[in-house]
Length: 198
Image 1 (cartoon, rainbow, N blue to C red):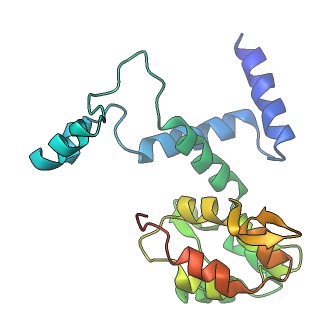
Image 2 (cartoon, one colour):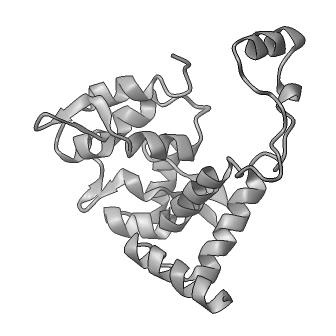
């Protein structure tokens, strides 16, 4: 049974274009799960008495997750694992851009590239690179992203279709928009709203 599951996972990873073996991917999943909130948080503890009353009146159920309910953290764990697996090291990013690794670290410090530090050093999400280097207009977009937004939120934004960005009459992702030569200002304006309730 374990071998069948391993083969199935390897097939899914291959279809998704992720070049990683099943054991390493599962290690990434475990690491991502460990970083997230506790498995069974008590939602009531996050709100004041007045907030709890208002939410309950609006019909929101604040009871803890039951053991038979799916864990709502699973999609985030999977997204974290994919983001980590597809991220570039400083050396890989330097090769991609044809620069010295120190230039990559300078770009990270100046927020002209984005990334995060883990045990192995800096990791740079692959979405910010095209075939010929960094995405056109990336610096303007990253300058607009609020400082408190984590890499996963920014990656999701850059890879989610936006109605305001149209290519050939169809919604495009910010990444597609920039790769197609679109003006970075509309993407930067949308990026500036990340983390803002609507």
